[in-house]
Image (tube, rainbow, N blue to C red):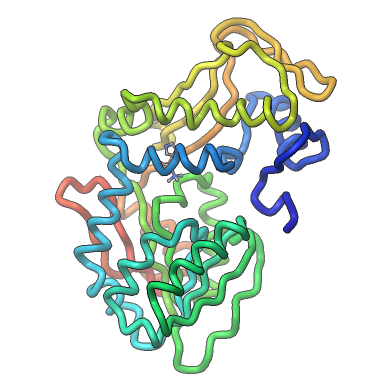
Length: 320
Ligand code: AVJ
């Protein structure tokens, strides 16, 4: 198991990990910015699961309700014989709602995830609950070229990308991912969850929860830098900042220096002036029609759309 597979290392502070290299690059650029993938060590993954349960964080429960209510209608789009490819599979909770609505012994399930240990454990749990389901896990970064198991004649390849994870991508990255997906899902389709543009107060609250879980999740990146890389900075030096940027239709998360300070990492000293931020995440919001236009340019034909009464979240079917 290569430590770089899930972007984190354990044990003694190490200067040679991809996290160290990426953090140096992040702190050296203007404006300072790092990939959100470094949120997800064990502590960060647990915090994310807590976020999903927060009263203010509507996306998870809204999407689960859509999958629960419309699973039969959704899986009817797939056709009778499918190879179901889940991108960034994680805990494999959501796919169960689809499998419950299908004769799953005719499904070949291919969960793709960068974190091999978590993926294989989740597959064991799924196999125990769905006897007869064919599961072929693939440990890979799905945003990079990868090889899926062959799809037999008469079987459609269908992608599943829930959670509005695509919101973490910049528009250029989203376009690149959708083009890759349209090519590898040719003849099949993609079922994708997207978070919709909405009242700014609702968006703001979802990323600024009263219990401070999102703040802890954001600050965890620096906790990791301290624990794993021996980074030094004032304990109360950084604060959580999350706001909706309407010009880009995205939530931005940052870690903001509460005062002028320095962060030391492996012999380098990085200066933050008061209020300067390390940008940690984008979470892009879409309208249904804007997303369908992006998907169409990437090679998909938009199909059915399922959304909640508030129109806060949508699950889209795209034919490829
Ligand atoms: C997992 C990327 C969909 O953008 O809402 C939650 C991550 N960040 N709270 C999101 C997240 C802060 C989440 N995604």
